[in-house]
Structures are given as C-alpha cells and as structure tokens.
Length: 221
Ligand code: SAH
Image (tube, rainbow, N blue to C red; front, side, top):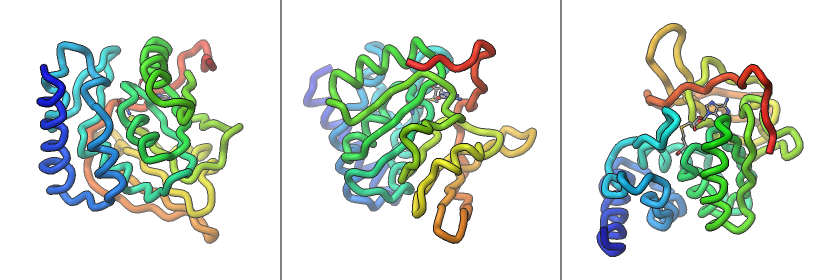
C-alpha cells in the first residue's frame, strides 16, 4: 500500500475516530497524526492499521484501538518533559504516542519475545526517550519513581498498591479494572493530590488481562 494512502487513512482516523468522538487535547491529536500505526502491526495487517479496532500482535495480545490510546493519553493531562510509566508495552504503539508528546517513558512488558521485538522497533525510531524492560509491571519501576503519569494497558483485578505509591503528587494513573467475577471492565482514573488519592470511573473498556509474573520470577533486561 502506498505511503500517501496510509497517511490519508491516518488523517481520516484522527478526524473520525478521535476528534469527532470528543478528544480535545491538541497535543494528543497532533501525536496521533504523527505516529505511524501501520509500523506497529505485522505486514499482513497494514491495510487494517487505521481501522477503528484493536488488532492482534501475536502471543495472544493486541494493539489497542486508536480512540482508546488517544483518550487514555489525554486523561493523563501531562505536558512535555513529564515522566510516565507504562505497563504492557505490547506493540509499542501507545509507547510511541507518549514519546511523541515529549514525555520520558518507562515501559514494562511481561512477554520477553514481545518486549525484544518491540524494543528493537522502538529504539530504532525513538532516540532515548523510551526505556524498556521485561518484567511484571505491577511491581512498578522503583528506581525511576515517582511518576507524573502511570498508564496500564491490560485489565487488572485491583489497583496495585505499589503503583499508587509510585505516583507523584498531582500525578494521574489510568487503569482498566475488571469487576469481580464478571467480564465487565471499567477504565479508572486515580488522581493523587497532597490530600490523598481519589478515583473516577470513566467508561467501559475491553483489554487483555494483566497477568501475574511467570513462576520463575521477573526477568529484568
Ligand atoms: N499498549 C499496548 C497494549 C498491548 S496489550 C499496545 O498498544 O500495543 C497489553 C500488554 O500487556 C500485552 O503485551 C501483555 O503481554 C502485557 N502484560 C500483561 N500483564 C502484564 C504485566 N503484569 N506486566 C507487564 N506487561 C503485562
């Protein structure tokens, strides 16, 4: 598929899926225009890269739907230079959007093969703004904490307390939470102020599960 057609599709995606659905943050909109989503999917899915849906990326995982990426990013309300922790690097698309906004990104992925493939992809295009690691993101990234923003891109059964502790004052965390024994997931925004943490339930989502570390323990790389 021609580069000009992919660009046209990306611009249309931003108009129809992002702006029309109410994302207002102009920096986020610009980042969504710049980051080439088709470079984060396999060759056979390039034609679908700007569709209004998640797509498979191997290992049973998915690249998130563009609207969800834009909406979650805007909810963090960060500015250039902010420090962000992302759980679930996956394809690296969300990571690349955060980096395009000028944030310093720390991202963790549980599946080593996925982290390696994506890490190579990201490191090629994103000179040093992004640090990737293999491990269980529920442990956070203690050496780099605290963070201005934390984004979890897999559905948790509860909000990990370690992550809340790594959220700085005025920091915001966005996390999909699965409710009890149901399939229902809600996107939760946790905001820390000097007075404590408050929670807002935003809207229903559908993410792959946030899994526990392999029994052999986390592998750091
Ligand atoms: N942000 C990614 C979404 C990938 S799907 C993208 O846009 O492509 C969620 C990812 O979270 C998967 O790659 C999965 O392997 C990873 N994951 C699940 N549990 C995890 C955990 N405990 N720690 C780190 N990554 C985890």
